[in-house]
Amino acid sequence: MKKEYLIYKLSEEMKEATRIDNELFPKFDVKRGLRNEDGTGVLVGLTKIGNVVGYERIPGGGLKPIPGKLFYRGYDVEDISHAIIKEKRFGFEEVAYLLLSGRLPDKEELLSFRELINDNMPLEQKTKMNIIELEGNNIMNILSRSVLEMYRFDANADDTSRDNLMRQSIELISKFPTIIAYAYNMLRHATFGRSLHIRHPQEKLSIAENFLYMLKRNYTELDARTLDLLLILQAEHGGGNNSTFTVRVTSSTGTDTYSAIAAGIGSLKGPLHGGANIQVADMFQHLKENIKDWTSVDEIDTYFTRMLNKEVYNKSGLIYGIGHAVYTISDPRALLLKELARDLAREKGRESEFAFLELLEERAIATFGRVKNNGKTVSSNIDFYSGFVYEMIGLPQEIFTPLFAMARIVGWCAHRNEELTFEGKRIIRPAYKNVLDDLPYIPIKKR
Image (cartoon, rainbow, N blue to C red; front, side, top):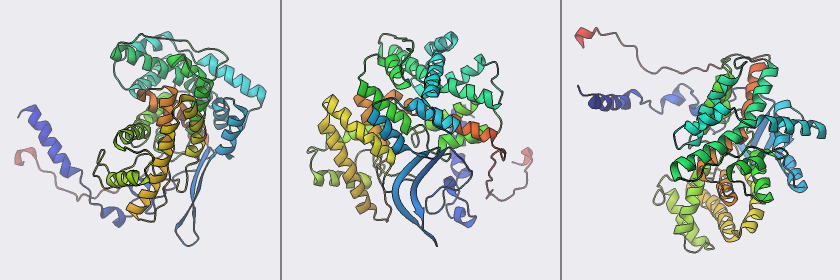
């Protein structure tokens, strides 16, 4: 039997072997995707890190949509962000300190923490050479391999004591920007024939500023402050999001930090999770090219209706950036990002595109409600604006998802540390119901 035919035959048999009838899930009360029938997540753990709020439970059953809220260690992210925006300063390091420690730092502690981050940003020479030698056009894969490479240089890689977990957390948060910047510059050199730049991180610069310096050197203050806000808004999103839950599940086995974080990177890479902002950016470009009058409500509504009916664009029936698993009336991250996005569009002379995006947001929500008519309340999510913001800053699509990882590494580390140190810890081990009848074994001579 030819090997090519065997692969085809196995794939055809896989079709039947993997088929599970949908009616079996309610029959055995199985929560597909760890989701309840009303779309809410199945409660599988407790945490003191982040809280995502998008609805209230109605006594007697049902959900009431409410404006979205996101809390970091009990603090409203809107309060944190507005204070940082008002003071025109960089706040990602402050948020990292808060999520790792459970409390806000004072000025002296924050200064020392920033210095500690800067001290740890440079990479081992072997890691730099490894990035240069790695082939591939996906920065997320290079990031994952680089994280696993860090295991080699850690004399206490498998130590899960509190002190060691915190040290590893700070080193990962510090090194992600450097790895991503170097990996992209290597990619543009190897793939696009551009000059190779390896710029060393600078003292006294924030993480956002250092990243932009290492990536492309030239940036405006508003570029850096907007990137800083994006990092703040994506640093944490509760224990139930796929990548954070992946880190917690992996960590519960007692494995090393680098293996657990690499698993989280693999989860975030998926287009249904961290890759969503690229889909919004591509959709926005398509709409700019296919809608003639950017101010016409009728033309936009007609096109969105056709999109939802799977007639145009990629015929998926989706409007990317609209809807969220938890948020209903609003995603607080999208509202906050929109504030600086408007200023950035003004600085870059792209106000007409921003106005078009705002109108698309409004009409997408209205059209979704009219076409679907399912009583579900939806809003735009952070991905609706993040791709456009990244583009205005001058960041390439290849690093959109790695930037998400650069922010979320803070939340991943905080949740890993919690998973390994709380008193009631135990390996996460849910159950799957087998729905195949037992079969008698047939000797090979009789098959």
